[in-house]
Length: 337
Ligand code: GDP
Ligand code: MN
Picture (cartoon, rainbow, N blue to C red):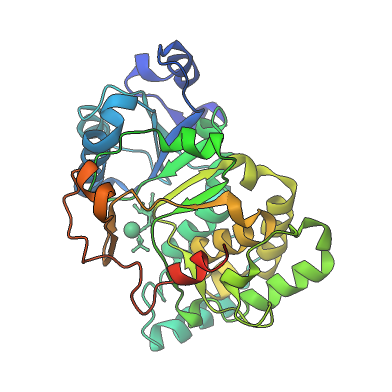
């Protein structure tokens, strides 16, 4: 079944490990872009890939991995492949990594969706959105096409990269021992995670050995861990280390949360789950704010300022940046140091 999960296109660009090692640049990271998308997302996908290629990857040629719960159409593959010379592969997600598990109590899940719809929470009634959040939380890094790689950069449809990137952020991660990075951090909608923090506290009690002494609990909580302040890193942008997700602490954490069923009974996002894990299982200095990467995903953006803005030829207004606005958690992150 693993071979069936891979849809190579074009056939000469499928051996990603080989094209990676062929490269003549002195040092590259073992890294790839990861792009989860539906066929219907194609126009937004093209815009995002173009933006990334123009501002960064044209020079670096890191591979692209596209994933979908349905087979990509030939048209999708054709329109993406024309945009870059970098290796591209298109993968199918195994159904057990995507769909609501059998053991979830559907009546309880339905009630959860209704409660959230009544509250007007975005995607509150959607099952596919929940599948996506669970997949991004616990499964993408297990996909066959991602096995060769350690670092990934997550890209979504219709995002913008505003500035030239004149260095390799993957290498930056590697050389500075970073495991997770972000450009925007903000507060989660409380009704999507009403019991998440109780589960986290239970996990901490049960597995104290996984809590990093130099953690950043103070990013997540204003009272030393009693209550979750809803701060998280916005995961539609992530450059991170998949070995961290594949490691023992996160594996146990995901399994523990999975048993609670919160991806379906509530609407746990991969952003708070990743952020909580990175904050508790990594040292605070292993989390990086890419201040110099200009980035927009509706409805927020981070635009660099000063020399970083001019050197990056950033196509954004420095005054229009989420950084120190009311619902940003950047101040809290910076106060850790
Ligand atoms: P938002 O950013 O929270 O508003 O959610 P998006 O609609 O952007 O979804 C997040 C990511 O998951 C995007 O890359 C989407 O293309 C992808 N995605 C969301 N739902 C599905 C789905 O049902 N199937 C697939 N294949 N991808 C999805
Ligand atoms: Mn999105």
